[in-house]
Length: 338
Image (tube, rainbow, N blue to C red; front, side, top):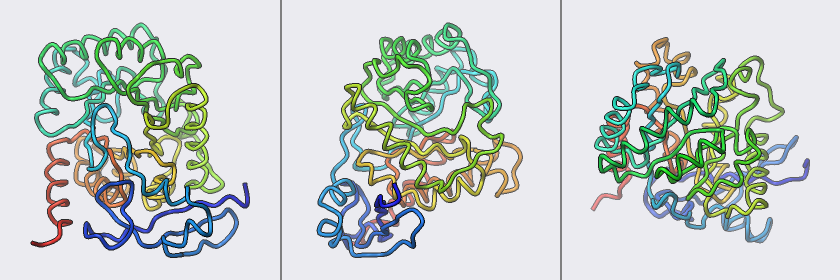
């Protein structure tokens, strides 16, 4: 493990073609940071990577990402959050009634959400596990109602339980978004989804913020996600159907979260799309001095746009309209003048 090489692309910071294109998307890079545990990192030209570390090291960074849930990953995507829970940290109870959640989901789709993420169990710090039957009863009417209402936006099911995921997919969901990276329920690897999002979390929601610690938060989480992709492949899930998420706020301090966001581009070396979920999280409130989660949209958007600038293919957000507007301005500024 000590001799393992980690390659982080250093983004050129412009939409103009100044180097190698990152993941077939909207950014380029001409240099990389090569990291090893216990050693000083070095900056080298991207063109030198294949001869020094093998062709795959660069290919994982440059290869076009496969479509997920029918969506191209060649441009940033917004995942809108629909919490069908009484106790989520940011909007608990607002959409616990199925009709309210359906209307909210439709409004998010109209506001610019590319994916709707439906969840029936809060995974906030300190949350208790919800029985599978109860969680299923919360989310299925919402998924069925959205589809009956004519929603064509791809639906994601946010759950750790195979039974809930399987029922949601049968009802029309396409993406299985699991904060445990398919470790909570051993049967999860047998769920047949269009796409799978594998997230890192240290511990479970009830205990994860007790005292999170890492040897090197960026490299430790990279290793975890790499191992979970390999486990998924061993279970018959093609890498082309996998998305990863470093799990901001899940068993991390504010310092951990900032280190992950600063070094976010490293996760492109996994060779799959990467999701960033920072919306309304505690570290936004701590740094931005805003105790009310409902008032953290400005800080959430700032962190989200930083992630887009590091190549995040999907942003998971609560404030869809505001994020969509900010993203349009960011994209316009990135475009090369005519």
